[in-house]
Length: 245
Image (cartoon, rainbow, N blue to C red; front, side, top):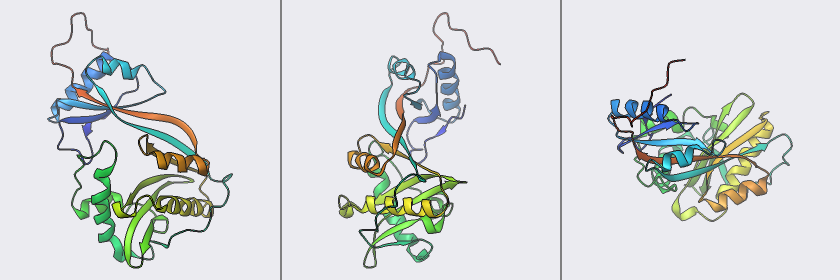
């Protein structure tokens, strides 16, 4: 079990953990690990494949704060995407745009549903995970003349890939740029032997969910995020900790 500060939300009193079963022992173990790093609450990730986890935590004072639909595209079977409706370039062609990409990231990350408390790290830290690890020719950038309007990148692992974060300036949203970038990513995937593209979409982003459906992504499952207090140091009467395997 990995219990850690929440990336971008390290200032909050919650530690992040994945729990896939409703277990008093695991909850207490996670709570103790959270206290060890100075956190008195947990942000628990689970999925609808283990539905008993949600009522277990709701009974202990937790509430659902975010839900993500995980969908996947069979790239090989997907039709070739239309030509971009807006001008696009890539970070491979325009490495000089790194500072503008960071500027947009600082605007877009806190605008995510349920992430308004997000704090962006300094440029070099963001670049180490939000820019440099990703294929530069699959890092698409939307332009209006020389002004960057948004970007989207792929995280590639062999012949599978995930859509990374897509960021648009507030002024550029609702104009179809997200669809243009996503279609370019599908085109890149087809040209580079990628078999599947997976994406995670917060359920409050109705337009992106609709776009994924139109492009042929199929639903796999939903991730659910809950927040609440850690277990008290004093266990309830009759509680017995799990024995080591």
